[in-house]
Length: 217
Image (cartoon, rainbow, N blue to C red):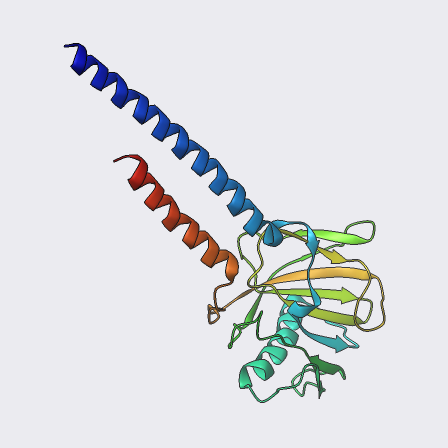
């Protein structure tokens, strides 16, 4: 009987140790995941490498007009004819105004084909040097920023969480931000190749499974 009691006690002790080790591993995994995902969730400025284009001068009258401006740039990007960023496109024949469109792109950020823009909402800028915007969980595809008569358009389909937009234009005449608009898309863009964070998290999960199997034997 004493032998059985010792065996049961030893098994319980081993299980407690395995549970503590598992808890420590889970806690460490959470910390590592937070470190990998933090750059996409922090309130940092939307980078210039996400810029799709500029329009100067621009006097849109509605969200649909703004969508048409974005979709002109999207159509040029999707054509695959342009290999230099930025490329001056000139005027948009479908636009009654006279503007100069300039196409920017970064294939390490943008998918090979971009979706058509669909207007979602227009909002006023915040106070201070920048405006904080919550993109949700990759809810939007494009950010339209109106700086006086200048427009900066960004692709944000790969961004989620909270980001900031400078209240002064960064590319053209450095005017003050008058408003910004957010746009969804009609189709899902082609996926961008997975980055190092995703690969690292997958490897972490596989290590965790191996650890659990070893400690619970």
